[in-house]
Amino acid sequence: MMKYLSTRRRSLPSSVLWSLACLTVAATACSDALGPHEDDLVAARASWAAADADDYRFEFQRFCFCDPNSVRLTRIEVSGGTVSSAIYLDVGEPVTGLSSLPTIESLFDEIEAAIDGEAYLLMADYNPAMGYPTDVPIDFIENAIDDEMSFSVSAFQLLDGSGL
Image 1: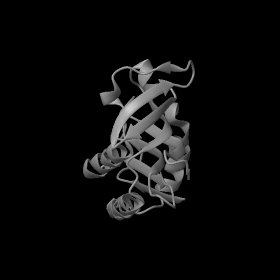
Image 2: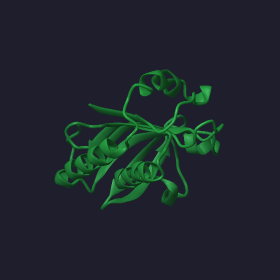
Image 3: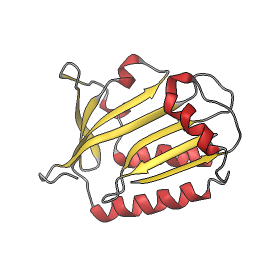
Image 4: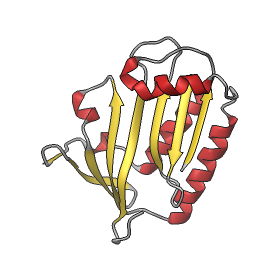
């Protein structure tokens, strides 16, 4: 997996995202340029485009100070590049409001927005074979409370039956 870390300033993020706090120590020794993130995002998007995956499913979880339903582990199914169905895995109930759920492409857009907004701390792991993001913690603003968020993608499977 590719893993990247950059920092724009030095401070500790909220304890809610403990992994960010631990990685901040390592971040102080890293370059403060976000350029590598842009290059890696471009490469990951190219791998994703080459996979030509329009029909797939994945498990998704967001971690943030937001609506409780937004942080529930969810299985999302995408058909033709659009979310077609989703269920909350904790209770097996269908999710309503599918338009608020991400596709892999929209997750790339979130990473790009963090890069463009010069997030204080950004890390991105991408699947080495297909390029989709797998684990992305972001701390948007130095010394701000409750602005951190992260998301994870797991159990990715192409709907044609092959999974990576």
